[in-house]
Length: 334
Image: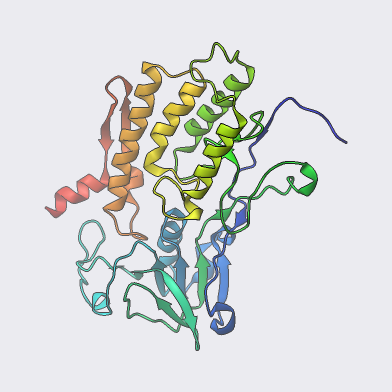
């Protein structure tokens, strides 16, 4: 059955197709179990095992923390982990109030290590960053490496200029990470990641609806009418490697860049005013504070930052902290 529509919004999410990066030597030399975080359900299956979590962001830290309660040892491999040596594993047995040791490399049975580089003969795991730790007793590797974008309903029969190569985590051609650059009555909601999701998605949806249904002449911030202009901007966006210009996989990463994007979407949707600005700025203030609390904690250690409670003060673009275990712990340690 086929039906015709004036517009299409694709909202199928991007947390269903697991991405597992290539790890040299793993297939040949690793004799344990290999999983992706999407398969994780019960930490008890890791009881008394040595586990390597590859990826130090949200899922990696969370899994390392939960698994550590039952596992023999957990290595949390994080590309942001700085250079260190085996001596760091011997230092700092005394933990401070934040659950960190003086070396900042180990918390309980969780060891924070740099990027996993390869697996050598005998199941020996090699880490980068000058790390001299090379465990050969890892029972399970859990890839906490995110997800691919996946659109199985778009193919060669779709008659659509559309590219989404597995492993790249990049969709094109898109204008402002939302509209198909050639066909603006087609849009993809929720592609950007590392954002506060639901307000973000709502602003995208409002922008799409306003541009689709509104009178272009009456819109304060209409889309460029020129296809070539939109395609040119889409190509630049595709090639620059995200807002920090770092790598292809970060094309849709926003993080701290999300706030200006939210303002842009509010303007595209004809909804930008003082109230929206105060709302966005307050979101940013809370996001930044929560992020600073999280970064002060050991990755894979206690997640006390999640217990912080806030009271919004939109009119002043600020907030009041009702309770914070992180601040309480910091006060005790001083």
